[in-house]
Image (cartoon, rainbow, N blue to C red; front, side, top):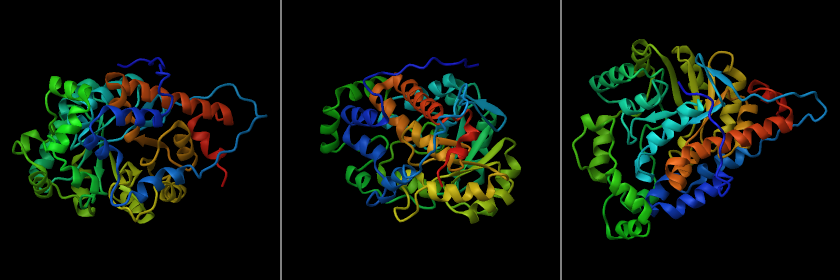
Length: 386
């Protein structure tokens, strides 16, 4: 079992923006652009963070205050902080063994790590690292046979929470990735080779660890797919559009906690409650799917106000700091997740990146809590300036 992790921060990188800038210097352009970009013109990508930062908190300086505690109970487990690591695809493309680095750090800091179906470590390996504490995000397979086999693997590895994804009915239109010919492993165009040569540390680490692959999907897919073939495989293998008929058998089969990620309006939240789900993650996939959509903080505020007493309401997309986490919790979220922030950390600092980023966010959030006189996470809505 993980104990209390000592907070250690690399003082060269005291913000997620610092980590982003360092990551941009350390990894090839095609990998950084995959991580950093949204879809179409990046409108929703930037709106996510800017509208979170429109939220303001009120400090109560004359109230009696003894301490601030970040511990948060969720699905029967008490986490040391009210944030976790969101699922990110192709993590090993940004930095070798990134999912394992982040899963280990999450376990040691006692926060949740969500493994994506399309990342580069297997269900079994992450389950081993986290001693059965990791969550899993499922891209819904087109065939029940594949879905059932993944469930068996998750149950054998003792995953407590299954997150089903609803906001990828079609893959987002991402101009950078199209220009870069992004595939797994990356297409070796002259342009990409030149980018790799400019990043010798990344190239050395990637060579040492071996090229990344979709380890969870490896038993089901033919080897060596280029971008066009990969897209065809994903379209044939996964049916991204969820509906009530697809969710009902999952609810019947899955004995653990069941969460739906990608909810963006009250109607879908109400359906999730009627289907007996345990939680929802309000999300727009980090601004990578619908550039014309709302930022996440707006539907989060409405959904939490209406349904918080009936289902666990969480949020990701756009959070980049401890104050962002505080703003989101004050707006009604019971828990938050960050994706890019942790990938900037591991891309910038390698094996130390997960530990540093978690420590940084904990330190920032603790400072906000003490500043506004907030004793526990559940008290944040009392500090919201409406």
